[in-house]
Amino acid sequence: MEAELVSRLANDLVWIRPELLLAGFALAATLVGAWLGDRVGGLLAGLCAVGLVIAAFFAWQMRPAEPQLVFGGALSIDGFSGYAKAVIALAAAATLLLGADHFARRNERRFEFPILIALSAVGMFVMVSANDLITLYVGLELQSLAAYVLAAFRRDDARSSEAGLKYFVLGALASGLLLYGASLIYGFTGSVRFDVIAASVADGGLGVMFGLVFLICGLAFKMSAAPFHMWTPDVYEGAPTPVTAFFAAAPKLAAVALLARVLYGPFADLEDQWRQVIMALAGISLLVGAFIALAQTNIKRLMAYSSIHNMGFALMALAAGTEKGASAALIYMTIYLPTTIGAFAGILAMRRDCKDVETIEDLSGLAQRKPWLAMLLTVIFFSVAGIPPLAGFFGKLVTFQAALDAGLWPLAVVAALATVISAAYYLNIIKVMWVNPPAPAFQSSGPTIAMTAGLATLLIFPVLVVGFGWVEQAALLAATSSFP
View 1: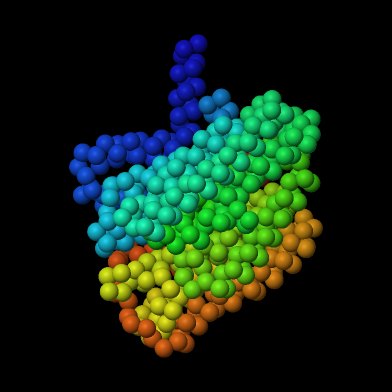
View 2: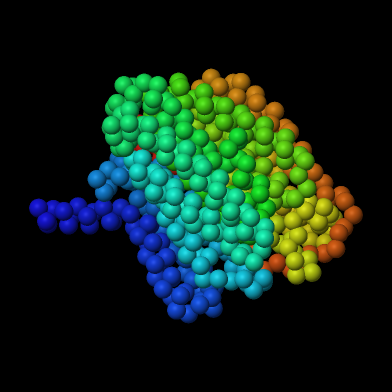
Protein backbone atom coordinates (compact mmCIF):
# COMPACT_ATOMS: atom_id res chain seq x y z
CA MET A 1 0.00 0.00 0.00
CA GLU A 2 2.74 2.46 0.91
CA ALA A 3 4.63 1.69 -2.29
CA GLU A 4 1.46 2.32 -4.28
CA LEU A 5 0.88 5.65 -2.56
CA VAL A 6 4.47 6.72 -3.14
CA SER A 7 4.21 5.72 -6.80
CA ARG A 8 0.96 7.64 -7.21
CA LEU A 9 2.42 10.70 -5.52
CA ALA A 10 5.49 10.57 -7.74
CA ASN A 11 3.27 10.34 -10.82
CA ASP A 12 1.18 13.30 -9.63
CA LEU A 13 4.28 15.41 -9.02
CA VAL A 14 5.48 14.78 -12.57
CA TRP A 15 2.29 16.31 -13.92
CA ILE A 16 2.71 19.53 -11.90
CA ARG A 17 6.32 20.28 -12.82
CA PRO A 18 5.55 23.90 -13.87
CA GLU A 19 3.94 24.65 -10.51
CA LEU A 20 6.74 22.95 -8.56
CA LEU A 21 9.39 24.85 -10.51
CA LEU A 22 7.90 28.27 -9.79
CA ALA A 23 6.93 27.49 -6.19
CA GLY A 24 10.45 26.21 -5.51
CA PHE A 25 11.93 29.35 -7.03
CA ALA A 26 9.66 31.57 -4.88
CA LEU A 27 10.66 29.80 -1.67
CA ALA A 28 14.39 29.81 -2.47
CA ALA A 29 14.32 33.41 -3.71
CA THR A 30 12.59 34.54 -0.52
CA LEU A 31 15.45 33.14 1.55
CA VAL A 32 18.13 34.59 -0.75
CA GLY A 33 16.42 37.98 -0.88
CA ALA A 34 15.99 38.14 2.89
CA TRP A 35 19.68 37.36 3.31
CA LEU A 36 21.25 39.49 0.57
CA GLY A 37 18.64 42.23 0.17
CA ASP A 38 17.52 44.18 -2.88
CA ARG A 39 20.91 44.04 -4.60
CA VAL A 40 19.98 40.58 -5.94
CA GLY A 41 16.66 41.84 -7.32
CA GLY A 42 17.93 41.97 -10.90
CA LEU A 43 19.43 38.49 -10.69
CA LEU A 44 16.25 37.03 -9.22
CA ALA A 45 14.15 38.73 -11.90
CA GLY A 46 16.32 37.16 -14.60
CA LEU A 47 16.14 33.73 -12.99
CA CYS A 48 12.39 34.04 -12.62
CA ALA A 49 12.00 34.96 -16.30
CA VAL A 50 14.07 31.92 -17.29
CA GLY A 51 12.02 29.75 -14.91
CA LEU A 52 8.79 31.00 -16.46
CA VAL A 53 10.02 30.16 -19.95
CA ILE A 54 10.99 26.65 -18.77
CA ALA A 55 7.60 26.32 -17.06
CA ALA A 56 5.93 27.31 -20.35
CA PHE A 57 7.90 24.57 -22.13
CA PHE A 58 6.90 21.96 -19.53
CA ALA A 59 3.24 23.03 -19.70
CA TRP A 60 3.21 22.85 -23.49
CA GLN A 61 4.72 19.37 -23.39
CA MET A 62 2.08 18.20 -20.90
CA ARG A 63 -0.99 18.31 -23.13
CA PRO A 64 -2.25 14.73 -22.99
CA ALA A 65 -4.86 13.44 -25.41
CA GLU A 66 -7.02 12.47 -22.41
CA PRO A 67 -7.32 14.57 -19.21
CA GLN A 68 -5.12 13.34 -16.36
CA LEU A 69 -6.60 13.76 -12.86
CA VAL A 70 -4.01 14.21 -10.11
CA PHE A 71 -4.11 14.60 -6.32
CA GLY A 72 -7.37 12.76 -5.94
CA GLY A 73 -9.02 14.62 -8.81
CA ALA A 74 -8.30 18.09 -7.45
CA LEU A 75 -6.41 19.08 -10.61
CA SER A 76 -7.03 18.20 -14.24
CA ILE A 77 -4.01 18.23 -16.54
CA ASP A 78 -5.25 18.43 -20.12
CA GLY A 79 -4.70 20.22 -23.40
CA PHE A 80 -6.69 23.27 -22.36
CA SER A 81 -4.75 23.84 -19.15
CA GLY A 82 -1.40 23.15 -20.85
CA TYR A 83 -2.09 25.70 -23.57
CA ALA A 84 -3.26 28.33 -21.08
CA LYS A 85 -0.30 27.77 -18.73
CA ALA A 86 2.23 28.15 -21.54
CA VAL A 87 0.79 31.49 -22.67
CA ILE A 88 0.40 32.73 -19.07
CA ALA A 89 4.04 31.92 -18.27
CA LEU A 90 5.34 33.70 -21.38
CA ALA A 91 3.22 36.78 -20.62
CA ALA A 92 4.52 36.87 -17.04
CA ALA A 93 8.10 36.57 -18.30
CA ALA A 94 7.54 39.51 -20.67
CA THR A 95 6.28 41.71 -17.84
CA LEU A 96 9.39 40.85 -15.84
CA LEU A 97 11.47 42.19 -18.75
CA LEU A 98 9.46 45.40 -18.65
CA GLY A 99 9.98 45.74 -14.91
CA ALA A 100 13.74 45.19 -15.12
CA ASP A 101 14.41 48.52 -16.83
CA HIS A 102 11.60 50.46 -15.20
CA PHE A 103 12.45 49.75 -11.57
CA ALA A 104 16.19 50.05 -12.20
CA ARG A 105 15.75 53.54 -13.69
CA ARG A 106 13.65 54.62 -10.72
CA ASN A 107 16.02 53.01 -8.21
CA GLU A 108 13.12 50.89 -6.96
CA ARG A 109 14.40 47.41 -7.74
CA ARG A 110 13.28 45.05 -4.96
CA PHE A 111 13.76 41.33 -4.67
CA GLU A 112 10.07 40.80 -3.86
CA PHE A 113 8.87 41.66 -7.39
CA PRO A 114 9.89 38.43 -9.18
CA ILE A 115 8.79 36.37 -6.17
CA LEU A 116 5.30 37.86 -6.30
CA ILE A 117 5.12 37.33 -10.06
CA ALA A 118 6.13 33.67 -9.59
CA LEU A 119 3.55 33.10 -6.83
CA SER A 120 0.86 34.77 -8.90
CA ALA A 121 1.77 32.53 -11.84
CA VAL A 122 1.50 29.43 -9.61
CA GLY A 123 -1.97 30.59 -8.58
CA MET A 124 -2.97 31.03 -12.21
CA PHE A 125 -1.63 27.58 -13.08
CA VAL A 126 -3.80 26.09 -10.33
CA MET A 127 -6.79 28.10 -11.55
CA VAL A 128 -6.68 26.78 -15.11
CA SER A 129 -6.25 23.18 -13.89
CA ALA A 130 -8.82 23.33 -11.07
CA ASN A 131 -11.19 20.35 -10.97
CA ASP A 132 -13.09 21.15 -7.79
CA LEU A 133 -14.42 24.25 -6.06
CA ILE A 134 -11.81 24.24 -3.28
CA THR A 135 -8.87 24.08 -5.69
CA LEU A 136 -10.54 26.79 -7.78
CA TYR A 137 -10.69 29.10 -4.78
CA VAL A 138 -7.17 28.33 -3.56
CA GLY A 139 -5.67 29.08 -6.97
CA LEU A 140 -7.73 32.24 -7.36
CA GLU A 141 -6.75 33.59 -3.96
CA LEU A 142 -3.05 32.77 -4.40
CA GLN A 143 -3.07 34.79 -7.59
CA SER A 144 -5.12 37.58 -6.04
CA LEU A 145 -3.10 37.96 -2.84
CA ALA A 146 0.10 38.38 -4.84
CA ALA A 147 -1.70 40.86 -7.11
CA TYR A 148 -2.85 43.00 -4.17
CA VAL A 149 0.74 43.39 -2.99
CA LEU A 150 1.97 44.10 -6.52
CA ALA A 151 -0.61 46.89 -6.93
CA ALA A 152 0.73 48.58 -3.79
CA PHE A 153 4.34 47.75 -4.66
CA ARG A 154 5.44 51.40 -4.61
CA ARG A 155 4.94 51.89 -0.88
CA ASP A 156 5.88 55.58 -0.78
CA ASP A 157 3.50 56.49 -3.62
CA ALA A 158 0.00 57.47 -2.52
CA ARG A 159 -1.54 56.39 -5.84
CA SER A 160 0.02 52.94 -5.63
CA SER A 161 -1.09 52.48 -2.02
CA GLU A 162 -4.60 53.59 -2.95
CA ALA A 163 -4.64 51.16 -5.89
CA GLY A 164 -3.61 48.27 -3.66
CA LEU A 165 -6.21 49.14 -1.02
CA LYS A 166 -9.05 49.47 -3.55
CA TYR A 167 -8.06 46.25 -5.24
CA PHE A 168 -7.93 44.41 -1.91
CA VAL A 169 -11.26 45.68 -0.58
CA LEU A 170 -13.18 45.09 -3.80
CA GLY A 171 -11.35 41.80 -4.37
CA ALA A 172 -12.45 40.61 -0.94
CA LEU A 173 -16.04 41.43 -1.86
CA ALA A 174 -15.71 39.44 -5.10
CA SER A 175 -14.18 36.51 -3.21
CA GLY A 176 -17.13 36.60 -0.85
CA LEU A 177 -19.55 36.40 -3.77
CA LEU A 178 -17.61 33.51 -5.24
CA LEU A 179 -17.48 31.62 -1.93
CA TYR A 180 -21.18 32.13 -1.35
CA GLY A 181 -21.90 30.75 -4.80
CA ALA A 182 -19.61 27.79 -4.18
CA SER A 183 -21.34 27.05 -0.87
CA LEU A 184 -24.75 27.07 -2.57
CA ILE A 185 -23.49 24.70 -5.25
CA TYR A 186 -22.03 22.38 -2.62
CA GLY A 187 -25.20 22.53 -0.56
CA PHE A 188 -27.48 21.57 -3.45
CA THR A 189 -25.24 18.99 -5.13
CA GLY A 190 -23.44 17.53 -2.11
CA SER A 191 -19.95 17.75 -3.59
CA VAL A 192 -17.20 20.15 -4.58
CA ARG A 193 -15.85 17.85 -7.32
CA PHE A 194 -16.66 18.99 -10.84
CA ASP A 195 -17.53 15.50 -12.11
CA VAL A 196 -19.96 14.87 -9.24
CA ILE A 197 -21.50 18.32 -9.67
CA ALA A 198 -21.98 17.61 -13.40
CA ALA A 199 -23.80 14.36 -12.58
CA SER A 200 -26.16 15.94 -10.05
CA VAL A 201 -26.50 19.51 -11.31
CA ALA A 202 -29.91 18.85 -12.86
CA ASP A 203 -31.26 17.77 -9.48
CA GLY A 204 -30.05 20.93 -7.74
CA GLY A 205 -32.80 23.08 -9.19
CA LEU A 206 -32.90 26.82 -8.67
CA GLY A 207 -30.37 26.74 -5.84
CA VAL A 208 -27.59 25.54 -8.11
CA MET A 209 -28.45 28.24 -10.65
CA PHE A 210 -28.24 30.93 -7.97
CA GLY A 211 -24.89 29.53 -6.86
CA LEU A 212 -23.58 29.54 -10.43
CA VAL A 213 -24.62 33.17 -10.89
CA PHE A 214 -22.69 34.20 -7.78
CA LEU A 215 -19.72 32.14 -8.97
CA ILE A 216 -19.80 33.85 -12.36
CA CYS A 217 -19.99 37.26 -10.69
CA GLY A 218 -16.86 36.53 -8.68
CA LEU A 219 -14.98 35.38 -11.77
CA ALA A 220 -16.25 38.37 -13.78
CA PHE A 221 -14.60 40.65 -11.23
CA LYS A 222 -11.28 38.89 -11.71
CA MET A 223 -11.42 39.39 -15.47
CA SER A 224 -12.73 42.98 -15.04
CA ALA A 225 -15.92 42.39 -16.99
CA ALA A 226 -18.58 45.09 -16.62
CA PRO A 227 -20.45 45.80 -14.39
CA PHE A 228 -17.80 44.32 -12.06
CA HIS A 229 -15.07 46.52 -13.50
CA MET A 230 -15.10 49.35 -10.95
CA TRP A 231 -11.61 48.55 -9.63
CA THR A 232 -9.91 48.42 -13.01
CA PRO A 233 -9.31 52.08 -14.02
CA ASP A 234 -8.04 53.19 -10.59
CA VAL A 235 -5.79 50.15 -10.12
CA TYR A 236 -4.39 50.41 -13.64
CA GLU A 237 -3.60 54.10 -13.15
CA GLY A 238 -2.17 53.81 -9.64
CA ALA A 239 -0.10 50.63 -9.90
CA PRO A 240 3.45 50.75 -11.33
CA THR A 241 3.22 50.42 -15.11
CA PRO A 242 4.97 46.99 -15.34
CA VAL A 243 2.49 45.71 -12.74
CA THR A 244 -0.38 47.18 -14.76
CA ALA A 245 0.93 45.36 -17.83
CA PHE A 246 0.93 42.14 -15.83
CA PHE A 247 -2.65 42.71 -14.61
CA ALA A 248 -3.81 43.41 -18.17
CA ALA A 249 -2.28 40.24 -19.56
CA ALA A 250 -1.76 36.96 -17.70
CA PRO A 251 -4.54 37.11 -15.05
CA LYS A 252 -7.11 37.91 -17.73
CA LEU A 253 -6.28 34.73 -19.64
CA ALA A 254 -6.34 32.71 -16.40
CA ALA A 255 -9.78 34.07 -15.50
CA VAL A 256 -11.16 33.37 -18.99
CA ALA A 257 -9.74 29.82 -18.93
CA LEU A 258 -11.17 29.18 -15.45
CA LEU A 259 -14.59 30.48 -16.47
CA ALA A 260 -14.52 28.21 -19.53
CA ARG A 261 -13.59 25.22 -17.35
CA VAL A 262 -16.49 25.96 -14.98
CA LEU A 263 -19.11 26.56 -17.66
CA TYR A 264 -18.09 23.83 -20.09
CA GLY A 265 -17.38 21.26 -17.38
CA PRO A 266 -19.69 20.80 -14.38
CA PHE A 267 -22.38 23.17 -15.68
CA ALA A 268 -22.47 22.15 -19.33
CA ASP A 269 -26.05 20.85 -18.90
CA LEU A 270 -27.20 24.31 -17.74
CA GLU A 271 -26.00 25.99 -20.92
CA ASP A 272 -29.39 27.54 -21.73
CA GLN A 273 -29.43 29.22 -18.31
CA TRP A 274 -25.86 30.51 -17.95
CA ARG A 275 -25.67 31.63 -21.57
CA GLN A 276 -28.04 34.50 -20.79
CA VAL A 277 -25.77 35.69 -17.98
CA ILE A 278 -22.62 35.47 -20.10
CA MET A 279 -24.30 37.30 -22.99
CA ALA A 280 -25.33 40.11 -20.65
CA LEU A 281 -21.82 40.43 -19.24
CA ALA A 282 -20.36 40.41 -22.76
CA GLY A 283 -22.71 43.06 -24.10
CA ILE A 284 -22.27 45.39 -21.11
CA SER A 285 -18.48 45.00 -21.19
CA LEU A 286 -18.33 45.75 -24.91
CA LEU A 287 -20.38 48.92 -24.59
CA VAL A 288 -18.96 50.22 -21.29
CA GLY A 289 -15.40 49.73 -22.48
CA ALA A 290 -16.10 51.39 -25.83
CA PHE A 291 -18.02 54.44 -24.64
CA ILE A 292 -16.23 55.40 -21.41
CA ALA A 293 -12.78 55.08 -23.00
CA LEU A 294 -13.70 57.91 -25.37
CA ALA A 295 -13.53 60.40 -22.50
CA GLN A 296 -10.14 59.29 -21.10
CA THR A 297 -7.05 61.49 -21.25
CA ASN A 298 -4.76 59.21 -19.23
CA ILE A 299 -3.50 56.41 -21.46
CA LYS A 300 -3.36 53.86 -18.62
CA ARG A 301 -7.03 54.49 -17.78
CA LEU A 302 -7.81 54.23 -21.48
CA MET A 303 -6.06 50.85 -21.57
CA ALA A 304 -8.16 49.82 -18.55
CA TYR A 305 -11.40 50.48 -20.41
CA SER A 306 -9.91 48.91 -23.51
CA SER A 307 -9.30 45.72 -21.51
CA ILE A 308 -12.93 45.77 -20.30
CA HIS A 309 -14.05 46.11 -23.91
CA ASN A 310 -11.79 43.27 -25.02
CA MET A 311 -13.05 40.96 -22.29
CA GLY A 312 -16.44 41.33 -23.95
CA PHE A 313 -15.14 39.49 -27.02
CA ALA A 314 -13.78 36.63 -24.92
CA LEU A 315 -17.13 36.37 -23.12
CA MET A 316 -18.98 36.45 -26.44
CA ALA A 317 -16.96 33.45 -27.58
CA LEU A 318 -17.68 31.57 -24.33
CA ALA A 319 -21.39 32.36 -24.63
CA ALA A 320 -21.48 30.15 -27.73
CA GLY A 321 -21.25 27.11 -25.46
CA THR A 322 -19.38 25.08 -28.06
CA GLU A 323 -15.86 23.73 -28.44
CA LYS A 324 -15.35 26.34 -31.14
CA GLY A 325 -16.34 28.99 -28.61
CA ALA A 326 -13.79 27.77 -26.07
CA SER A 327 -11.05 27.65 -28.71
CA ALA A 328 -12.04 31.11 -30.00
CA ALA A 329 -11.67 32.53 -26.48
CA LEU A 330 -8.20 30.97 -26.23
CA ILE A 331 -7.19 32.31 -29.64
CA TYR A 332 -8.46 35.78 -28.84
CA MET A 333 -6.61 35.95 -25.55
CA THR A 334 -3.44 34.56 -27.15
CA ILE A 335 -3.46 37.46 -29.61
CA TYR A 336 -4.62 40.01 -27.05
CA LEU A 337 -1.73 39.37 -24.65
CA PRO A 338 1.22 40.44 -26.88
CA THR A 339 -0.64 43.51 -28.12
CA THR A 340 -1.39 44.60 -24.56
CA ILE A 341 2.17 44.00 -23.36
CA GLY A 342 3.49 45.89 -26.40
CA ALA A 343 1.21 48.84 -25.66
CA PHE A 344 2.44 49.04 -22.08
CA ALA A 345 6.03 48.78 -23.28
CA GLY A 346 5.30 51.91 -25.32
CA ILE A 347 3.81 53.60 -22.24
CA LEU A 348 6.95 52.74 -20.25
CA ALA A 349 9.02 54.49 -22.93
CA MET A 350 7.13 57.73 -22.16
CA ARG A 351 9.61 59.26 -19.73
CA ARG A 352 10.56 62.92 -19.57
CA ASP A 353 12.75 64.79 -17.06
CA CYS A 354 13.28 61.53 -15.15
CA LYS A 355 9.52 61.20 -14.58
CA ASP A 356 6.94 58.89 -16.13
CA VAL A 357 4.27 60.61 -18.21
CA GLU A 358 0.95 58.97 -19.00
CA THR A 359 -1.35 61.41 -20.81
CA ILE A 360 -2.32 60.95 -24.44
CA GLU A 361 -1.24 64.52 -25.26
CA ASP A 362 2.30 63.65 -24.22
CA LEU A 363 2.43 61.53 -27.39
CA SER A 364 1.94 64.62 -29.59
CA GLY A 365 4.18 64.56 -32.63
CA LEU A 366 5.91 61.37 -31.50
CA ALA A 367 6.46 60.38 -35.13
CA GLN A 368 8.82 63.32 -35.53
CA ARG A 369 10.73 62.67 -32.30
CA LYS A 370 10.83 58.87 -32.20
CA PRO A 371 9.50 57.42 -35.46
CA TRP A 372 10.32 53.83 -34.44
CA LEU A 373 8.20 54.10 -31.29
CA ALA A 374 5.37 55.80 -33.16
CA MET A 375 5.40 53.02 -35.76
CA LEU A 376 5.36 50.27 -33.11
CA LEU A 377 2.47 51.87 -31.24
CA THR A 378 0.58 52.45 -34.49
CA VAL A 379 0.78 48.76 -35.40
CA ILE A 380 -0.22 47.77 -31.88
CA PHE A 381 -3.27 50.04 -31.70
CA PHE A 382 -4.36 49.09 -35.23
CA SER A 383 -4.21 45.45 -34.15
CA VAL A 384 -6.20 46.05 -30.95
CA ALA A 385 -8.77 47.94 -33.02
CA GLY A 386 -9.11 44.90 -35.29
CA ILE A 387 -7.77 46.43 -38.50
CA PRO A 388 -6.87 43.77 -41.13
CA PRO A 389 -4.51 42.17 -41.92
CA LEU A 390 -3.07 42.44 -38.40
CA ALA A 391 -3.50 39.60 -35.94
CA GLY A 392 -6.09 41.45 -33.85
CA PHE A 393 -8.50 41.30 -36.78
CA PHE A 394 -8.30 37.51 -36.91
CA GLY A 395 -8.75 37.31 -33.14
CA LYS A 396 -12.02 39.24 -33.37
CA LEU A 397 -13.06 37.28 -36.46
CA VAL A 398 -13.00 33.90 -34.69
CA THR A 399 -15.11 35.25 -31.81
CA PHE A 400 -17.70 36.55 -34.26
CA GLN A 401 -17.71 33.20 -36.09
CA ALA A 402 -18.25 31.30 -32.83
CA ALA A 403 -21.12 33.60 -31.82
CA LEU A 404 -22.84 33.51 -35.21
CA ASP A 405 -22.52 29.71 -35.46
CA ALA A 406 -24.33 29.50 -32.11
CA GLY A 407 -27.08 31.86 -33.30
CA LEU A 408 -26.02 34.78 -31.09
CA TRP A 409 -26.43 37.36 -33.84
CA PRO A 410 -27.86 40.13 -31.56
CA LEU A 411 -24.68 39.97 -29.44
CA ALA A 412 -22.56 39.94 -32.61
CA VAL A 413 -24.32 43.12 -33.77
CA VAL A 414 -23.59 44.80 -30.43
CA ALA A 415 -19.95 43.69 -30.70
CA ALA A 416 -19.67 45.10 -34.23
CA LEU A 417 -21.08 48.47 -33.14
CA ALA A 418 -18.80 48.57 -30.09
CA THR A 419 -15.81 47.78 -32.32
CA VAL A 420 -16.56 50.76 -34.52
CA ILE A 421 -16.90 53.03 -31.47
CA SER A 422 -13.69 51.75 -29.90
CA ALA A 423 -11.77 52.41 -33.11
CA ALA A 424 -12.30 56.13 -32.48
CA TYR A 425 -10.07 56.32 -29.42
CA TYR A 426 -7.37 54.12 -30.96
CA LEU A 427 -7.35 56.29 -34.07
CA ASN A 428 -7.24 59.41 -31.91
CA ILE A 429 -4.00 58.19 -30.30
CA ILE A 430 -2.54 57.52 -33.74
CA LYS A 431 -3.63 60.97 -34.92
CA VAL A 432 -1.96 62.59 -31.90
CA MET A 433 1.30 60.78 -32.65
CA TRP A 434 1.42 61.54 -36.37
CA VAL A 435 -0.43 64.85 -36.85
CA ASN A 436 -0.21 66.99 -33.70
CA PRO A 437 2.71 69.40 -33.18
CA PRO A 438 5.58 67.65 -31.40
CA ALA A 439 5.79 67.74 -27.62
CA PRO A 440 9.19 67.69 -25.85
CA ALA A 441 11.15 64.55 -26.63
CA PHE A 442 11.11 61.51 -24.39
CA GLN A 443 14.23 60.13 -22.78
CA SER A 444 15.72 56.97 -24.26
CA SER A 445 14.03 53.80 -23.04
CA GLY A 446 15.92 50.83 -21.67
CA PRO A 447 16.94 47.96 -23.94
CA THR A 448 14.51 45.41 -22.52
CA ILE A 449 11.56 47.81 -22.93
CA ALA A 450 12.48 48.44 -26.57
CA MET A 451 13.04 44.72 -27.17
CA THR A 452 9.69 43.77 -25.62
CA ALA A 453 7.83 46.37 -27.67
CA GLY A 454 9.57 45.18 -30.83
CA LEU A 455 8.82 41.50 -30.19
CA ALA A 456 5.19 42.25 -29.36
CA THR A 457 4.81 44.19 -32.60
CA LEU A 458 6.49 41.44 -34.58
CA LEU A 459 3.99 38.91 -33.24
CA ILE A 460 1.04 40.91 -34.56
CA PHE A 461 2.62 42.06 -37.83
CA PRO A 462 1.14 40.76 -41.12
CA VAL A 463 4.11 38.52 -41.89
CA LEU A 464 3.28 36.33 -38.91
CA VAL A 465 -0.42 36.05 -39.69
CA VAL A 466 0.58 32.88 -41.54
CA GLY A 467 1.09 31.38 -38.08
CA PHE A 468 -2.54 32.04 -37.17
CA GLY A 469 -3.62 28.69 -38.60
CA TRP A 470 -1.22 26.90 -36.26
CA VAL A 471 -2.55 28.82 -33.24
CA GLU A 472 -6.12 28.05 -34.31
CA GLN A 473 -5.42 24.34 -34.62
CA ALA A 474 -3.62 24.18 -31.25
CA ALA A 475 -6.47 26.01 -29.50
CA LEU A 476 -9.16 23.83 -31.09
CA LEU A 477 -7.26 20.68 -30.14
CA ALA A 478 -6.93 21.97 -26.56
CA ALA A 479 -10.68 22.60 -26.35
CA THR A 480 -11.79 19.33 -27.96
CA SER A 481 -9.48 17.22 -25.81
CA SER A 482 -10.66 18.85 -22.59
CA PHE A 483 -14.39 19.49 -23.14
CA PRO A 484 -15.75 16.44 -24.97
